[in-house]
Image (cartoon, rainbow, N blue to C red):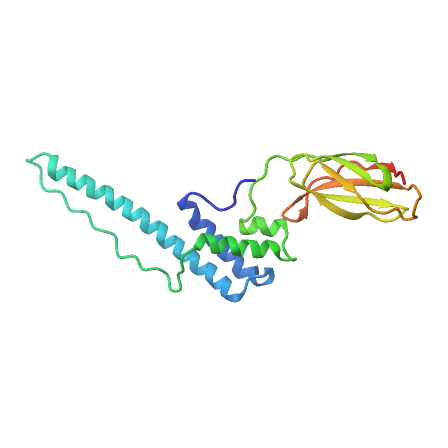
Length: 224
């Protein structure tokens, strides 16, 4: 999954501005403190000042180079060019602190860990990376001895999948998550020593939430 944090300096300005706006609106409901929210706004201002100042310095450097070359190597009959003017002294935002990227990533981790977090919120904050194309997972099951069942999962591009099962006429329940192509159901039978029919399905997960279509349902009879 591609990283959500911008690599181009110019993209950081709009990204942090958006992050600060979202934090002001919902940050405290997603685990951030009031001080954290204030810091996101300060960090946004600091990022804009630093990036703009850096660009101004780069432009000044080029102007100085052009001025130097014109005076040293230019036409001796030409008028002296106007000397470039240096950018104004940089004054950072009140409350500016170093480590903006690391701090912002920590804030994003807090937000994602909140029980109120959803993929839509992640998109709004800009803290969800891009994923490769994902399809519908597939599933095959094999009965093992001791009432265990092996699940072979076609992950369809997902890193993590939820594993569901139902048995004995009951409801679907999530019995685990899988990061690999194999999952072993080690649950004891409802009636000790007796075979039972179990149904299974899997569904992709992204940012701790289910996404996409679940696999087809497959069933198996266990072997005690």
